Image 1 (cartoon, rainbow, N blue to C red):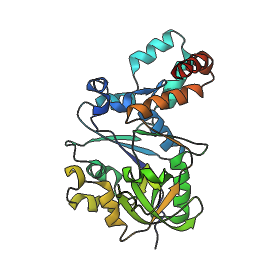
Image 2 (image 1 turned 90 degrees about the vertical axis):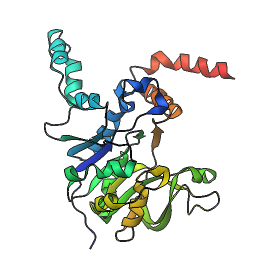
Image 3 (image 1 turned 135 degrees about the vertical axis):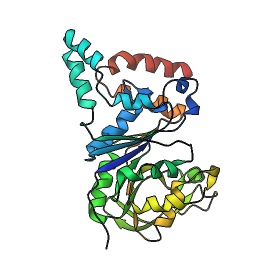
Image 4 (image 1 turned 180 degrees about the vertical axis):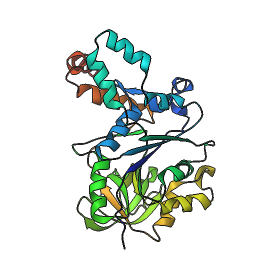
Length: 295
């Protein structure tokens, strides 16, 4: 029997060191770097909220306390805004806060990989399915990536992995899935291969950083040996879980910005800025001039 228990919780692994963005991340967590005027983590939390997530679980690490503070009320700031009649700003801030008691924080004391970070959330998630959203990845589409995954989950149950198509010449850079029976919005996954050798990939569909997983993954990760990079790899755990439970791929057709690397972060800022009616008129011509200067 395929389980379709309600999806209420989402896990956000935010303990990474962000070494690609040094020296900025020496003092500021990479998840708090801003795309236009919102931290990267806010975009990912918004995506989860849009999908109906009720409880947000952050797996943090040393130096990440500012993330917890961000998702809390700052009384001094609010009092100052009230005194200055900054009502629009107050409304904006209040709309970004999770409901009281709906955010939990736990620590990953050692950088032992994504699989270990997920395992650290086991007691908060409990015995129920959960979403996992990698905070470096910002998605943009008419229907949010996780929302589309939830719709597929309601039909199929089991485990869902969001996938996108890449250039077949680049499949060796990603985790790639095999394509099985077609489903509305996706397909059954027949296999998962982490960075296959060139010419051996089962498809050009790569895993893009969004998952819906059943709680049995925790017991697997808890006893799993370290894999690539001497870390506990989530993909290894999913491969073991796939022997007992079905996996489906949700075919995401929007835009994905990898804000864990500098080019993706810069592109996200430019792309989201030109979508803003209050910003585009001020930057459109300067951007065109910059592009023209490159020719």
